[in-house]
Length: 325
Image (cartoon, rainbow, N blue to C red; front, side, top):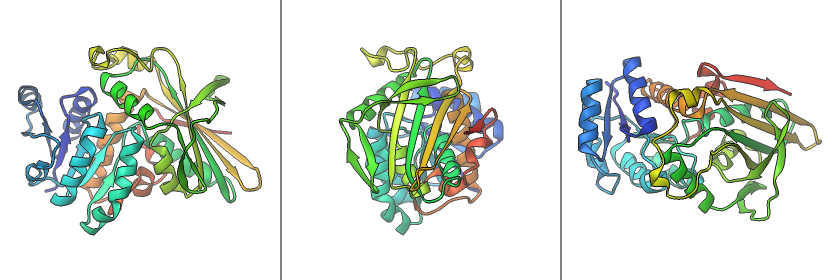
């Protein structure tokens, strides 16, 4: 029987994913680096657990596992050793990162993974599932799509883990895809996008869609933006942040993204996708992706959610609404 391993299961989002996997009756185990926390959660869920570090020896801890779902961030520290461990052990790798350099890594390792019949599928959470699905849908409405712009709306408060990942994203610098190539664009200017309540200013920032949207749509020119409201991007000692927003805080803030595709003739198509809060959406989407991979929906090598599951995957999560313009 195929078995899922949820790595980083005792973290804020990982715990929600483990609870979701249990509710669905999936065959799974949990893993991480803290024995006491793992033992406590494993007892609560009545599932086995494994304790190991994300390092060069991780492959030896994947015996009997067919899919690894990684929630342990910052992913700059965990993704490469776990991807390499999965390739060595013949295990499909999934994660929920927004860190662009992890997608670039998966892309570089794609040929090696394919040679071992292993799938590398980062981004099965709110980033990048909604935007990846929507980009493919909107591109179909334009003849000869030439340029793609994606804007994210980040409302409410951020989890400690996400705040640390954002530091990695900012550290990667501002990039865009120009004529099919990733290029540093430090002088990129902000733009206004309408998420449904009037235009708001969005600043350039490099998320994983600069890699995934290229693979999913083939559009050669891609730019990304984000609108920050409230205390979404915290500063100071990030280790002192709470684990993440409460259920009430999550319920108060839905997540939105805009996708705009321009054709060579200048025609423009836009859509907005609205979902439940990103922290609520991510464990639902990630576990649904893992479930489908367990059942055989997979590709070898580097893949994107839309590649594997189709452009309707984002709407599999209850509360998702797409509005076309």
